[in-house]
Image (tube, rainbow, N blue to C red; front, side):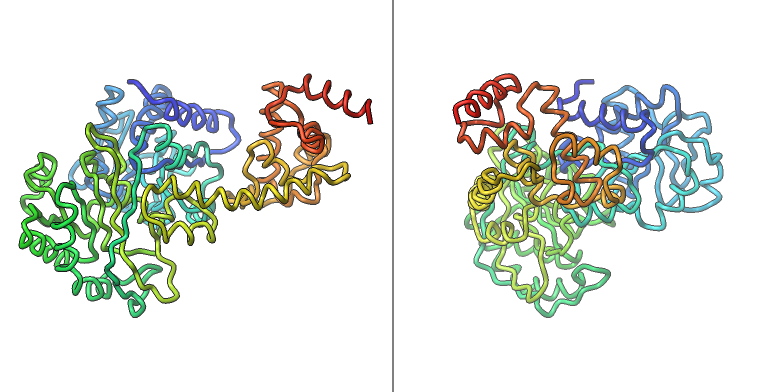
Length: 498
């Protein structure tokens, strides 16, 4: 099995987190399309040499996908524990339905210590009672959660259960490295008013959304037929009847469109026609948000607005996979009138600061290119602040000065529970020795981030933060990349002539 470099890093970092004994519940954050199933399959292969592995999923597609990809990538066959399928008790790897193991009688077929590792696919669901009952029963197992959540708030929620993010890679990194498709955004001049839509369980009411969207279906279908007929388009709507109506409207304008839902008797045939190109537009009502891989999709239309960045990332992620001849993914966005509500939009995929995200949300075109322009403006203001810090006579180093060497601390916030705690004594001793202002380091998470940067620079024989601060005062170019030895010589020479 050949893994991409970042997938190898994810496996190595996760395995290291477990065997070090420092934590037993870890999280991997990786964008949709980044190969999370391949990553946890490889980890399952390693762990299954000595311990039994349980993979939890909550939908039929995810269960079968885990079984298929595990075999394809490792040659290992997993047993299924679901409904009428009972896994043998000596199976090394079991893929189970969360709903099935929610029942105590099914859970208790296995002893509490039966599994050494539990993998939770789509881990942003794992705080639900249906998951927690199983996780608590197998309380001594290592737990790996895998999620594509792009949002700090979501990660903080997961931090209530998980102890550590073992590995994280961003959508931006995978696009720039050529592993995911570039993304372009085009806003359509269709005003859809959500101001009167109620909130149910933290998100927009599907029934109210259906009413808000349905009067615009013909207009949007006509636009798609006129301007985007050459696209392979996946459309998300709030209700099955609205999705079915939209597909009908699209056919009236000449688009080869179909609707699919969980109860479609010919569901496999519908998906096959979309894959082959017999159908060029497929509409659904939240059926295909997870566990659906169709790399030929090059246009996403989200007519199921949501406040959840995780859900939005799942929707957009259906189109980010690479495919021969596919130059980019096109997101068609609308002029949502939301009142006081904050809606997840293309800008929400990048984890920007609120003011940066608001500015990016008004821009069409290349998503990452526009984001860089927005962040460039913010960086200029930060650099002015850094110059003032670097010119101070103070002997200590402000954490913000780590930005001089590319360590992003300006918008750092704790995510895991341990990160919120005060710095430990070993952390404060290390930072104090490095000259860092301890009063500006309020928590263990920031302390860990700073120490990692200090250690990394030491291992690479680069200038210390004290040296970088002095070199910046002396207006030395590219101070962050000067070696420890060269920095010492420059500083000695400059101080000797002052």
